[in-house]
Length: 106
Image 1 (cartoon, rainbow, N blue to C red):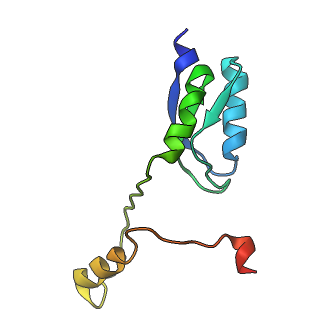
Image 2 (image 1 turned 120 degrees about the vertical axis):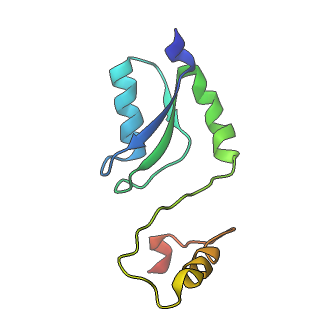
């Protein structure tokens, strides 16, 4: 019964699409409906919020909520400008960013 309202925070592996992952979940859990709150490219790993049966109603609300991205990186050499250079580069990546999809770049 708990599955009917379930939300699973899944670490999606590389290669399957988000749609494939929720389809596998639907078959394995023997539930009627599954959905996800945002598509990850097939080759991308990451956090995929999956909703089961009655919880699929939450997908629209989750998609409308803001997203936040976090990165952890390891530099193999000290940058010439020191920490200030790294801070400036990271600052340029905050806020609303526009990314053209690959089919628009051609």
